[in-house]
Length: 349
Image (cartoon, rainbow, N blue to C red; front, side, top):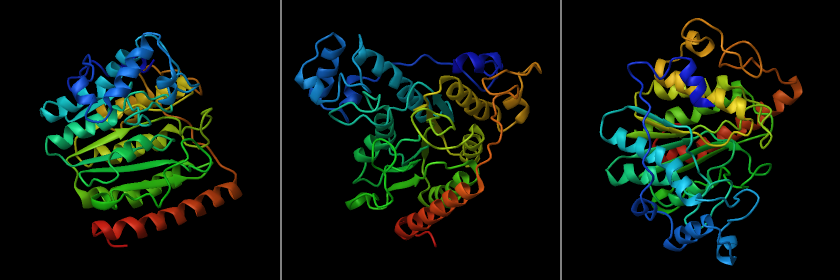
């Protein structure tokens, strides 16, 4: 669906864009993170062999169901992310976007939250092994627990997640106090958000924490999972964002002139999610140009599920009292994150 929208806007025909078929993640690369046992169990499950070993590793549950060739599918879907990493490392491309990727819940030895193989971890490991310092900025409404756990005691890969508070949403992790351990102390950053978080305060939190931190750590590459489940009305989350918030943040990151490896992620209203990813693609390909975000290249408006206004959503208004309580909670969260993280990176409070 995303590909169809992007194509209809002519964004695959620009001189600076190219659609590339992915190569599956190699088993050698998968074993940088996933265990041999889990990989073998996943392969067996994809051939219809479901036993206690599979169930113990999260396979065959409501959020990680079994299906034919599940290992091969997961390796190919995540392979778009690692293929993008290779293109960036080669210097051929500054930005690569794999909407089919972003499986941030998968752990080394189990599946979780619709995620079987963790492409984000593998891509970050690829960059790190090439000598690059990596910053992961995860915008999915759910905390990227599998990614955080993979790098919790390391300083070469910094994980930052803006997500709905674990008190109200799966996986129940990602609290402010989870800042890393040992060499990784201060390299895991979490910004938990209350129910009803809206565009303005969301971007304020991003600008006050993510931008100063990025300047301080000076990453060689940014991995950007763009889950669209933070959009208002998503059936599995409770935030109140429009895709304008994502567009503004993507623009802020793109203007840093640091290579970007973007992925998809969550998003359980398919129409809104596809439109949001198409908007992200348009910004990567063309910059924050409202003419492209709102109209087809020939000047024809692109209908979407909400209104005849193109890729961008309409502004949402929150009830005053509810809005005030959300703003107060996020302001306190930002203050706490700064106090815990900024001194460890030499950032003045």
